[in-house]
Image (cartoon, rainbow, N blue to C red; front, side):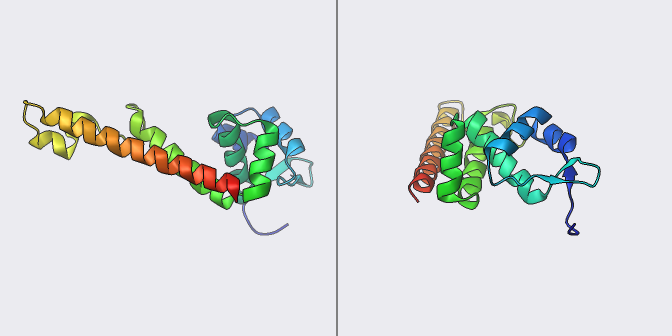
Length: 149
């Protein structure tokens, strides 16, 4: 075996937030996931395998693609472009989720300090909404581009 770190299926499942059975199923459905096993027969996954599993989970659960749709996406685009698009859209989801890690409470936003009570807050909210809309448009364009390549 190579010297790169390998992870057992239970560890990978917990880190992805899925059952081990889901990973075993995905392994049987997607050729890009090799079936590596330890000498004792335990499934082993590399960092590259985990990146592919994250992409599969994202496309199935977040983007609501079918198994065939995920196969097609990965066959046509590989994993690099799709992983980049996944990162962008995942980051955008955190922007609009008030409880997301890294989100900034409105009262601590730098513009909120300078906002006057006569509509400054509304202007900041409108600007934030505009930025969010543009990010979503760009992410959709990236996903569409990835699907066409």
